[in-house]
Image 1: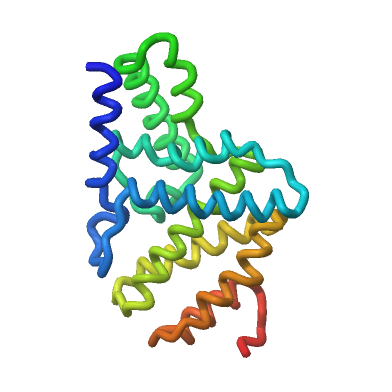
Image 2 (image 1 turned 90 degrees about the vertical axis):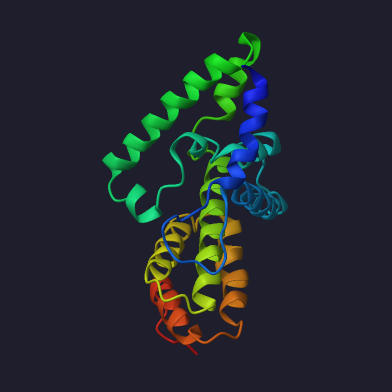
Amino acid sequence: MGVHQYFKSLSDLEKLVRCPGKFKYQDHNVASHSFKVTKIAQYLGTVEEYNGNEINWKRLYEKALNHDYPEIFTGDIKTPVKYASKELKQLFNEVEEQMISKFIETEFPAEYQEIYRERLQEGKDDTLEGQILSVADKIDLLYESFGEIQKRNPEPLFFEIYEKSLKTIIQFDHLVSVQDFLNHILPEMLEEKFIPRSELREITYSILGEEDLE
């Protein structure tokens, strides 16, 4: 027992399939999601820094890289279920925190426990880095659902995930990096050629509050 168990558990993240129980053309796992979120957060942080906002890069990378590690204990819970109510989301958070705390106390040397307790705690907070993490997480979820919609996956869940992800991203539109995403990156996504494109464009611009789809 010890840090070996932590290193060993990292491979288990590759076995945790996201959005379990639903038909998907492409499976995504928690390990790849964490990597993608970190890369997206890096870009968003770059945009913020370029526009004069100070970024604590160490904090941002640690938040992004570690944000879903607690799922090693709970598995990936479907987004609509996990966020069905504030009370339910809080309950999930409390369970994850307790299991992480016990894991750290059991497996990590005493001198490093506080460091890892900080690293593995909930990273989405009111700091700029925490807000960037919230956005990066939803952008990757948006792209995961977009990929399934693009392939004409018949599951309506992916349209629901797309909508909820975009609505969450818009909540952070005070960030210059989110404005960059909404004004430049999202339109590029919608310009790709795929069969359900018109429906997705309609949903997107309806959420954005625009009437003219042309």
